[in-house]
Image 1: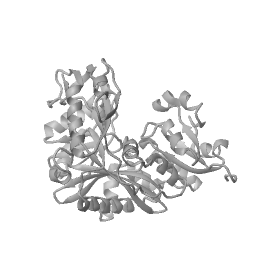
Image 2 (image 1 turned 135 degrees about the vertical axis):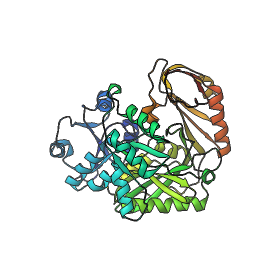
Image 3 (image 1 turned 30 degrees about the vertical axis):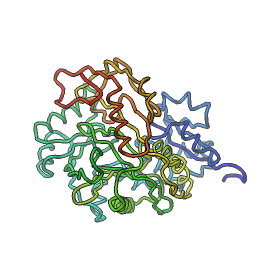
Length: 434
C-alpha cells in the first residue's frame, strides 16, 4: 500500500522495445516511482543494466520465477506493472494476473503475440475473417499457399519489426524464402510461420506518395477505449519493411472514422481492458482491414506524437498501468512530424559508405539525423525494419512539404552498400547504391 504523499510504485518489465529507460523515467516524473525488472540473460538488458542501476530502482530477475519476482521486497507494494517490449508481454501479463494489476490478461496477451491465434479470435468474434494457415516445415508450405493463393504473406507466428516477413508470389520464391528464414547457419530458429493472403491496397485512400496502411495508437483503462492517434506511413521497402511514419496521417475524416471503428471492434474482440495498443490497418478497396494488433506502444510512435501534438504516449502507458485513464489530446497539431528510416536494399550485406549527415542537419525542417550504423556494419534484410541504418527526424507545415523533405534526404545523403553476389533481385533505395 502506498503511503499518503508517496508516489505509487510501478514495475517496468524491461527489454528491447518502444521506450528507453530515460524516456520512461522522464514520463514518470510526478506520476510514479519506477522499478525496472531486469533479466540479465537477455542481451539488450545485459547491455544496459549497468546504465539503469544508477538511474532508478531495479530488480535483478535473472533466473527468478514469477512468484519470486512478486515476493521480492522491491515489489512489496506495487500499484502497477507494464512493459514496452513485445517479447515481455506474456510474462508481464502473468505477473499482473498474479497480483491483480491493470494490464492485459494472459489470454489477451497471448492473442496479441500469436498471429495465428489473433486471426482466429477476430474471426470468431465476427470482426474480420482473414485466411491464416500454420506452417511448421517446408512440406506444409505448398498446401498452405494453395489454400490462400498468391500473392501471400509469410511471417513468423510470433515476432515484431517485420523480421523474417515477406510477400510470396510463387512456390519457388516461397521455398527460397523459407530456406533463408530457417537457415541454422544464419542463426535462424525453426519457428512456426503463418501464411495468409496479401490484403489488396487502395492507393487512393491515403493519397499519392503515401502507404496504403496506417496504425492506430489507443489507450484503454477498465474497458474504456480511447484512440490517441492515426499514424500515416511512407511506402514500404521490399519485401515488407517499414520506411517511416508521419503524424498526422493523410486520411479523410470518413476513412479515419472507419479505421477507428474497426480498431475498437478488434480491441473489444481481443479482450483488451487495460493498456496501450498499436493496431496496424490496411486500406483496401473494400474498406479498412486489420493487419495485426500489438499489445504495447508502437516503436518510434511516442516521439512523433509528442512532437506533433505535445501528448506523451509513454506517460499514458504508465497512467493506464496504474488503473487510471488519460484524456486523448484535443489541441490542434503543432506541426506535421515525421521519421524517415534509411533502409538498405535487400541485396545489401554490409554498409560501405554513409556521408552527408552534417549537411542534412543544416536543412530547414530536419531536426535530427540518427546514425545507427558505420561503414563495415553487417546487414541482413531478414531482420526487417531493424536493418535500418539511420532515422531522419523532421517536421513541416503540411504533408507536401514532408514529402519534399524526404526527397531532400535522398538527394543529400550519400550511402553505398556491399552487395551479396547472389542476392534477391530488387531496386536499391533512392539514397543508396551497391
